[in-house]
Amino acid sequence: MDKQLVTVSMGMKKADLAVVNGKIVNVYSKEVYDGGVAVSNGKIAAVGDIKYCIGEDTKIIDAKGKYLLPGFIDGHIHPESTNLSIRSFAEIVLTHGTTAVMADMHEVGVVGGLEAIEAVLDEAQATDLKIYFVVPSHVPFAPGLETSGGFFNSEIIKKALSHRDAVGLSEIVAPYLLQGNAELIKAMEIASSMGKSLQGHLPEDEGTSYECLYVSGRQY
Ligand SMILES: [Zn+2]
Image 1 (cartoon, rainbow, N blue to C red):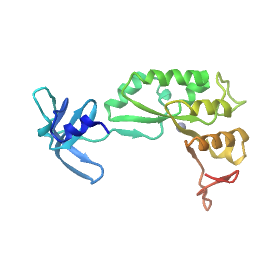
Image 2 (cartoon, rainbow, N blue to C red; image 1 turned 90 degrees about the vertical axis):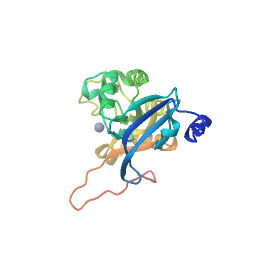
Image 3 (cartoon, rainbow, N blue to C red; image 1 turned 90 degrees about the horizontal axis):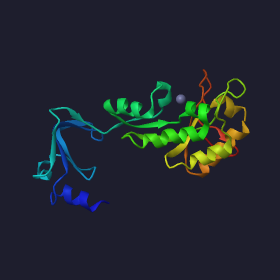
Image 4 (tube, rainbow, N blue to C red; image 1 turned 45 degrees about the vertical axis):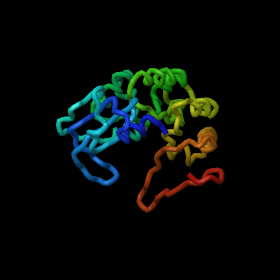
């Protein structure tokens, strides 16, 4: 716990920044009420009536009645499909309130492999957008049907899962899984053993529902 945050929240020290005259959207209690946000050292120290956190040196931003709420998290998006560089992408989505995205950069991998994906993740460090990297489970998507500069096997996926931004394995699709694709199952087991999440899609036909799958004795 940041000691300075506690002292600012208790009014013993003043905030660096105060956003005042906002409408707080409390996503826990589902209430909207007047208030502001006090920031110290880049972190939120207090929310609500924060007048006591304001000192002579506190920078004040007047929200003029605008809503103040936590940043949106986009649970699945391919930034590269916008044809924008990650910096331009970040600039645009941040303007609309999205502060974090789950992205696998699959198409970047198809063009340039893991090295290219890592270059994009490094470039993203220069932005205020948080990228949760979900490692693409198949690069290219349809081997033999597309020309690809990058190719992922379970070894490369393991390396990618060790990346500082990696949180899971992405786009595990039903056809490959149900065919028992050995490399895919190996990658899923590696991801699980590393404590990473498994994300994907399954079809739901009329009368058929896959609530979970069992592969190699493990429940998915
Ligand atoms: Zn997708």
